Amino acid sequence: MELKGKKVLTIVSPDFDDLELWYPIIRLREAGASVDIAAEIAEHEYKGKYGLSVTSSISFENVDISQYDGIVIPGGWAPDYLRRLESVLGFVRYMDEHNKVIGQICHAGWVLSSAGILEGRTVTSTPGIKHDLMYAGATWVDEPAVTDGNLISGRRPPDLPIYLPQLIEALKKG
Image 1 (cartoon, rainbow, N blue to C red):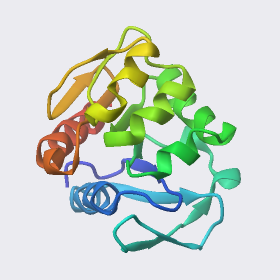
Image 2: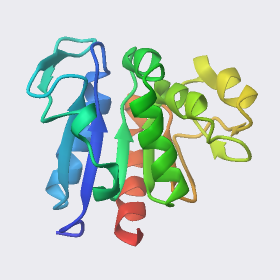
Image 3: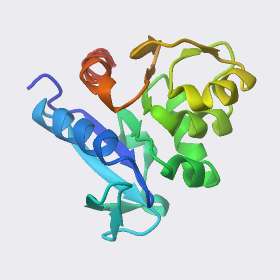
Image 4: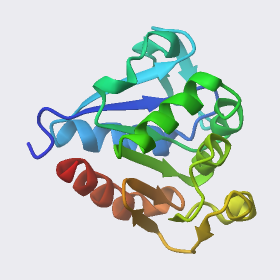
């Protein structure tokens, strides 16, 4: 259990990408990490873009971000909403300021862009938001997954098998 004792937060709102949420949760739990699912409402069911659902375990207002070793942000359409929530942006800024792992895939880069933490960073994402990330100061590359310090970014669902090992390795070191 390579991540035994590690605590990870993932965040959701409606229309998250089903694979980008569930694949990391399953892999991180398999590796021994504890994963909490935060949303605006605790113990509420949220539906993904393709119909899978998840029940949140904690509300954003009850998250003590200092208790987590990493945050994982799935893509889908959810990041376009999540980027508007100051609590979510605060989680991302805290994790970055404390050099804790931030995982983001596909459209999740929107949240990091709005949090203002991309200046001078190298990231990947779905090509559809590359300009948003570049205008936020990042160097965007068309790679399956990129590690830049505490920031692990993935491009799309087919890249999850490359993204997750990098995310797990960062959490092991962190």
